[in-house]
Length: 258
Image (cartoon, rainbow, N blue to C red; front, side, top):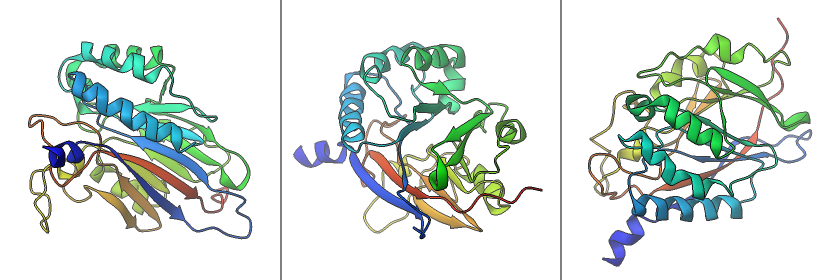
């Protein structure tokens, strides 16, 4: 029993993206959480533990990359008490996932707003300053929504490196490979959720077949896939513990103006 409880206990995963240079004063530190799939008190316990890890990491910003409920949009209410105390100097941001749209995007969005979280729906904003600044963009869900990368990047008039929040990992490959996005932060896959030792995950959702866990170098940029916190149809995690990611970012130089 203790082993199964450990499998359900979130862990803090620290990842460095990019390399420090002489101009780098300090990295931009972002915590990513994903796939909460709130449905009951077990999910509340898991989230509260993850948020303790988050605040203990002292990030500059916090981002959520979608799927806040399993199927009932009203369960977003389970988030509110836990998220009221979530804060970071540069803000807390979110995008929606496929389960959020399949339930009720308006209810989910309103719940996130009540918790003081900025929902980026085909929008973006500057995050950080100096050599650590990036442009944080967020897209509508790629499975069931209407993502618009052009609209999301429209305000990047400083030509900063782009950190993209987009729920499904495989969909980010083209904009990352083309150099339009430096780092794509995704979730959706649950890291396979159930993985036998020494074997690749075999049960993965659509748009998470190629990139389903961890950091991937793609052309001039990167895709990072967070394993998420919750579960979906099978309420078990095995070989794929819930994850809180602390990303230390060393962004490249600004893109040249056209």
